[in-house]
Image 1 (cartoon, rainbow, N blue to C red):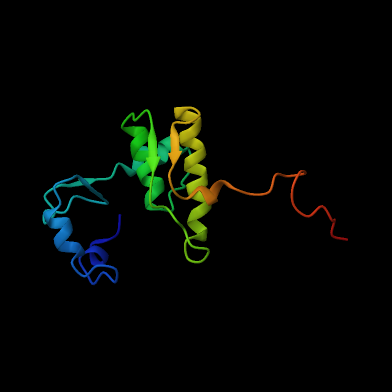
Image 2 (image 1 turned 30 degrees about the vertical axis):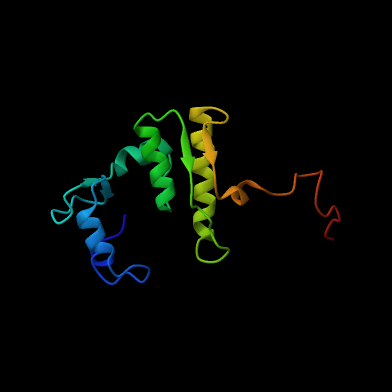
Length: 135
């Protein structure tokens, strides 16, 4: 979902990323179709924002969940989402939002988190954690 200067430029994780995109046989959702990437498809951002009812898409995984809902998937599985407690924290709340939205639309057990389960854990309010009040 990055701008061309990012995906065509130096990719710190994989210097061969742009060549991989050009050779990819699967659909590659992007901001705009790129003629150099034969399988590129424009991501339907307008429909995703309408689905969310908020201007809230701060991570690629959120866009993927939205796409699954727009395509009518009846079950969505999430793999490889292990956000660190640093640069990805601002994305974590948006991911939680989309997990909740998808769970509400698909039903219980249909939004399956194979990773990133820590995003949905916290002390139960009133039952767990420190009960000392701050005065």
